[in-house]
Image (tube, rainbow, N blue to C red; front, top):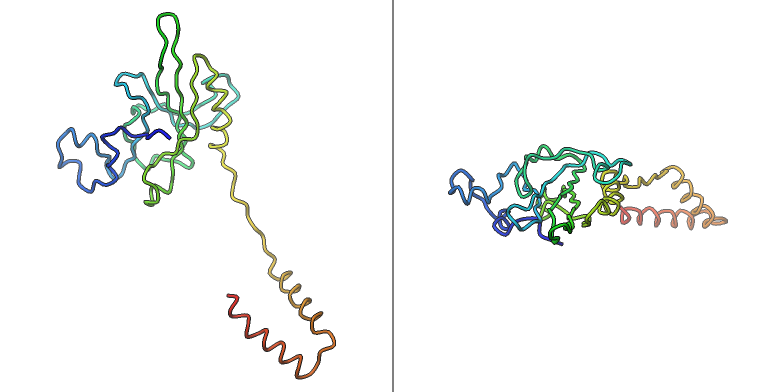
Length: 202
């Protein structure tokens, strides 16, 4: 996976000093603690790249299907953490490559998803690349549309239901069948041994 950060900020997670105490060049490379740095894939300075926070994916054709807020912040910039919703999915346009004269170059588009585990320190990078596609015309949208739809509408985790009374009735029924015909002291001894085993199951 392509590292979403320019080389000069790849160690910013290790920085533990205040931005305003550093020189302007270093300050630009360090992300303030209440912000998160956006991915940037393009390596050229004037790549014509942009980034958008997706809000919905529609049935419209081409790039019009990816609706959301185009950020005024350029790729590689920072945005406040409190603006990150759940889920946060970005569509990055990383600019064109190739092409000359009347032959248009292919434009690269990348889908990113914010990783909540990064906020808790469980991940070194805040963004996960979901998919990428490049094309001269709108073929890229056909490739990314399904991925974006699933990312914007994650399936809820399955909920396991458990009927405690039904389970207990089954356990008692099984015990009764096993003790059928057993009475007196022998039956009492078996139940006492069962009782001693229960704490070990907790």
